[in-house]
Structures are given as C-alpha cells and as structure tokens.
Length: 106
Image 1 (tube, rainbow, N blue to C red):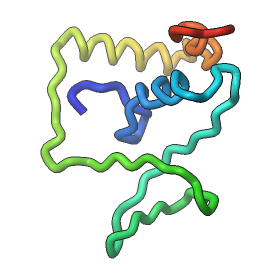
Image 2 (spheres, one colour):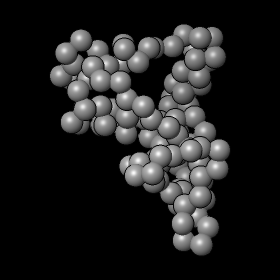
Image 3 (tube, rainbow, N blue to C red):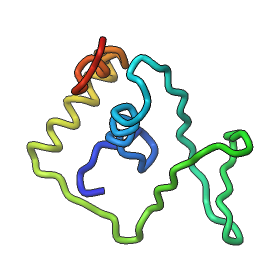
C-alpha cells in the first residue's frame, strides 16, 4: 500500500471512504458500509461472518505477495502518536471529518 492509511485489520484505504463521499453521494446522506475479509475458493470470493444482500455492490482489494513498504522514522512516530490518541479515546467524529471535506455543505 506504500504507506497509505487503511482501516484497522484490513487493506482498505481510508481514502476510499472520502472518495465515495465526495462522489455522487450527498454529504448529508448516511452511508452504511461493511469491511469484511474473505478468500478466494474455487474462483469465488468467500466472506465468512458477514452477510451481504443479493445484488450488493462490493469493492475487492487483494493483497499482493510483495506489497511491503517502509516508513520513515517521522511517519512511524506520527502513526504511533495517532494510535495512542485513539487508544485514549481522542477521536474525530465522522461529522467533523465531513465538515473538513471540500464542498461540505454542513
């Protein structure tokens, strides 16, 4: 992922959420999203522990065998600081994130 921030326990870039929000979806609309992990079995994606409705639109991101990256000491320090803030409950609400997006109507 080259240092791209992702949702915890996944390889789903956080930027995907922002891109989706900035697209055709009005900013005031509530977005229901699921993050699930699965594997390919006989050419089909099998996701356990997550029920998806028939016809659901999904995005698939697959791990690449050589998908490693290295952080600079500054980047690592910034990530560790952010994790510590989250562990202390110092979080930013989704509403605050939306207000900071370009074109926000809130």
